[in-house]
Image 1: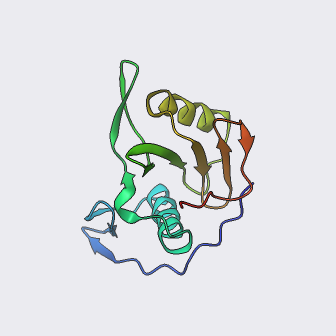
Image 2: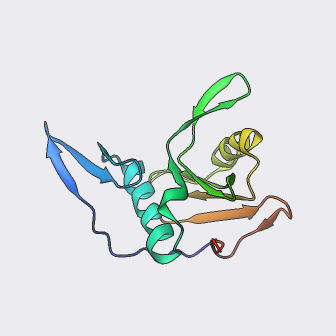
Length: 142
């Protein structure tokens, strides 16, 4: 398991029609603040603030083709103009399971990244795809 020290959040949150929204600085828009979105936004801030990943090379919730199906990944990091790391986020109460691993492996069929990360905000696991070794830390971007 990878230990994540999340930075203190400085999120913009608003309420409209009795629903909470959070401003996603990557997508540059207000999105519904679901439990999964809370995990995603905190993990994004960890990558940007703590790990110094360039925000401009982070893609959030975009559609990809997985075989004949259209799917949406949570977070994709680019490096050298290629997909480099994919991150699958689940809400805190969801157990990271074989189903989560199969989901990210399916996405990787189309993306072919160097690193796969799954997180529910409390637990984070990762693997380097070329060596199939589990990660003890989130890789540096450099």
